[in-house]
Amino acid sequence: MSRVSNPLRVASTAPLEPANVNKQMDLRARVLQNVAASITGRGLAIVFSTGAAILLARFLGVEKLGEYGAIYAYIGLFSWMATFGFEPVLIRELSKDRNNASSLVHTTIILSSLFSVGTIGFSILLARWFGYSGFLWWLLVLASLEFALTPLRLPAVIFQVDMRQWYAATINVVRQGLWFVIIGALWIVKAPLSYVVLARVFTALVESLMMWAWSRRFLLGDKQFLLGRARMLLTHSFPIAFTSLLGMIYMRIDQVMLHKMTTDSVLGQYVAAVKVSELFELLPSSLMFSIAPILSVSFAQPQRFRSHIDRTFRYLMVLAGGLCVTMTVGARPIIWVLYGEQFLPAASLLAILIWSEIAVFFAAVVCNALIAGDQQRFLPLPTLVGAAINISLNLVLIPHYGATGAAWATLVSYTMAWMVCLLFISKTRALAWQGLRFAFPVVGVALFSVACAARLPIHEVVRIIAALALFIAGLWITRSIYSSDLNDGLAALKGSLTRNSKKPIPRD
Image (cartoon, rainbow, N blue to C red; front, side, top):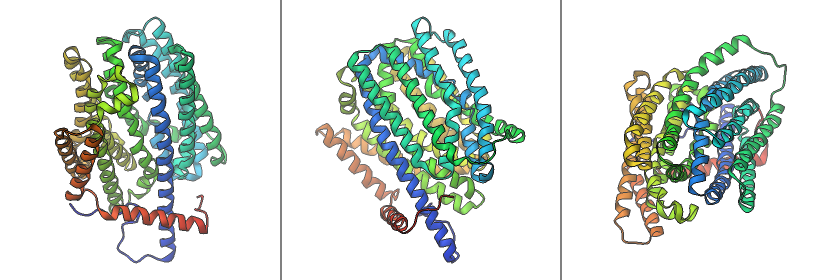
């Protein structure tokens, strides 16, 4: 495997003029600062979110957690309609046309408002057909009000475009911290499930208002509804919206089907495992939030663009592999510590579900790369394949194997959608192979590490450490990591701090 260049440097062999050097150093420092802010903020958010998930599971118990999961799994099936894929396209357009930012955002907000109202009505209308009746239906109506807040969040894309990700990170921490505090209070007073749903809507409102208030200061100038851009937004966003619909189907339909085909107690165990595995999906988004605008701009420079994609694939595959090793070997103690003995059946589900994160991390790079190159039209096919496989496998496996069948359906469908299907599309084959050449050795090393650690007659905590040690050694042997990775990170951090101490990073 050839060594991959640093994506924070421009791929060029020509000597650099002082002005260009300074510009690259500013970009490198800016990216590092945003990635650090995202990781720090999302790290804190993960802590609060994990704490809230623990309290929620212990507070609600298996059956009520299943009802809670059923409500938000169903609501998730319609989130694509409210957002309609506007954000990625808006980020791309703002990155290229910063002068019209205010009008572009204003146009998107108007479109999103129409879609959000329609989403609420459509989701409520179909709820009874999916088996939501009685009090559960009223809770679903309350939960659906969160869709009305979608337009308020749209202006916050400017944080990503202008590389001011610390704003978004701070808002996310505030929301998760507030959610944690409210869930703790509800646990103390033994509040019913309806209060939990109301609390979630309230925290979403606080988050949306903060996004609206903080982002408006960076959107100066006249606001006009741009009819031509509106048509473009709808045209370019439709493939992403359709992809999101299909993605939500294969990400959430398993919980809806478990609710309908089994019991909420079975679903509760599954939801507990899903919540743990999905906690770490914040990690790839932290990196991609800062890289996405750079990908949009650098797409016209193939060598530079490929350098960015190579390094991002490698880092995310290594991160996902380490996560799989840790969670598979330590599934039982992790579930016991987080949720208690009543949720121990979720440990075997977590050990299966966590491997689907390989495909999730992989897809994060693929989606951003295709959108950056205005190739989002290819996104619906893998999600369509994933949705079809997931529904088919769930129909076959759930009646016989319950939640375990749903977990395997998730793993297979995610992998087939984002790591296999793209190989059959000529325009995406090169991108898929670009990622798979990093994924194959990492996944192989991860599986080998888990298999070896499982045979060691040692304490579970020591087994986790041993598995990670084997994993790191395997990465070194397969040249999936380099000593320069640490050196580059430290050098970039030192350069960022040194430069920031001399003068502020340019705002524009």
